[in-house]
Amino acid sequence: NAGVMQNPRHLVRRRGQEARLRCSPMKGHSHVYWYRQLPEEGLKFMVYLQKENIIDESGMPKERFSAEFPKEGPSILRIQQVVRGDSAAYFCASSPSGSPLNEQYFGPGTRLTVT
Amino acid sequence: GDSVTQMEGPVTLSEEAFLTINCTYTATGYPSLFWYVQYPGEGLQLLLKATKADDKGSNKGFEATYRKETTSFHLEKGSVQVSDSAVYFCALREETSGSRLTFGEGTQLTVNP
Image (cartoon, rainbow over all chains, first blue to last red; front, side, top):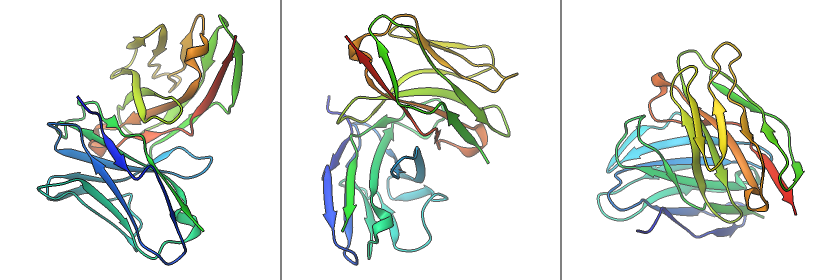
């Protein structure tokens, strides 16, 4: 039973390029959460998605960041025109439903470095 | 808003020593509290949780008690092992914020043989 998969594990982008981070939830899970961990800080919530719906994007920066979770395929976190301050570890988590009683299962993260 | 504060790390202990990692929180309602552990190169794993005041969460020899009066959820283990070396995150989830988790900064624990 595979866990939450994230790829790539490491991503290097130059300033101004686009970064695409992928997250495949655990089998049977239809709810996905994205968190960002900046250096020396804890994880910060970014966005919560259900299949084809954004439920809560209160933690997403207003510009350059977007997320989707299509009916088929992985969830994608997209960062356009990356800047050095976007360098961080991005973690995805999934759960079988949105109930607060459900545990969130985390992937290994994608380490994004912007040069 | 909600916040979680953990004791500063890193923490280095000898095998079989007693471990305490402090965690305090600020919340407007009645949050559920969690400890997650992250081993090198892996994702976060839920270690234990407590959903109401005075609940004690426990797993793998680790314990934490939900103390509403001191807004704390300190992690303890009586005798650590080298395999416990990891980063530990305290987190909360408010009833009113849906499924969003709010994390502390994480505490790096290294246990030496």
